[in-house]
Image 1 (cartoon, helix red, strand yellow):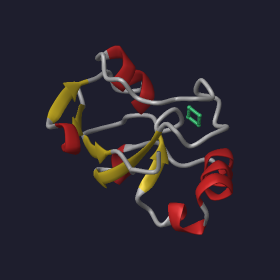
Image 2 (spheres, rainbow, N blue to C red):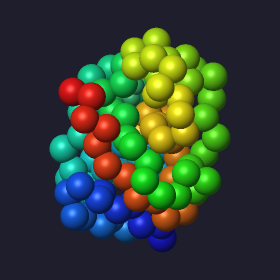
Image 3 (cartoon, rainbow, N blue to C red):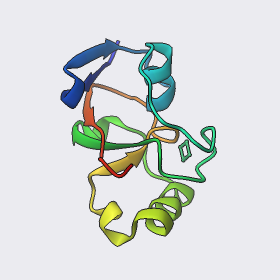
Length: 100
Ligand code: FES
């Protein structure tokens, strides 16, 4: 089972491979904002990926467009993912981007 480590909360979760990061967080009782309900229409669910970027599913255009629309080009620097879109495929380390 992959591990999702929340660096800034000093928590490590064993999660099911193939679920979104958001589902993994919520399934483990982690309170994580997701204002649009996981429909790729906000950025409140974003995570900053500290390690394991390649252990997440590829970013689709819809996610890229949403990040750019709400946070600008700097959100596309290879550090940020929408947790409701990124699927866990291996170990990752994440933190909150501090946007909200
Ligand atoms: S919950 Fe709104 S984009 Fe993920």
